[in-house]
Image (cartoon, rainbow, N blue to C red; front, side):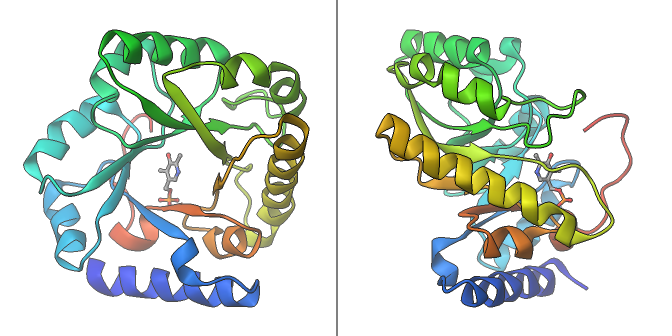
Length: 231
Ligand SMILES: *Cc1c(COP(=O)(O)O)cnc(C)c1O
């Protein structure tokens, strides 16, 4: 199947899952994850009318983005290294994986120096896995104030990557936990966190049922990724 058909099918699944949960498909943004795929593949999606894309490595994004139409919107979905912040800030309209106060502070500092402002989502390590990036749910509560006070960052929601499982249904509980955490933080801190970034190729429809506003889908659109050492 070509990229255009794949996109169509993923969009249909999003609308169907949304309908099940009483939501309309246009509350949900499909972020097409292009990491490892060449610009020709991305162009197929652009020709099919898609405009929102995600990359997880700054270097790769810096090479690709200038090759593509300038009206596309790019999201960063990876773990941002501090020495890449300055390059990354102007490229991306939303950072999904801000996973520590130290990173947020450094992004804020560099944004201030460069006269910019960034929109971010905080990554939550929903399963408390030692190997994963992200805030523990409890740490987020106790550590939210200093994040909210960073003047150059707008914190717009939460993001998670549940443990990989065979069954899409296994992710449901984690997605629901992220939503509940968001709801309770909104109340406790009197803030608005409109976005929940959750769901990938193997579980995005479950995420939509559980309230995702952004789903990050790569493989179902562009096919299997060429192997590389690390994502
Ligand atoms: C690669 C990646 C995705 C897309 O994964 P697929 O399984 O190919 O849909 C989504 N989110 C993040 C953070 C990723 O790194």
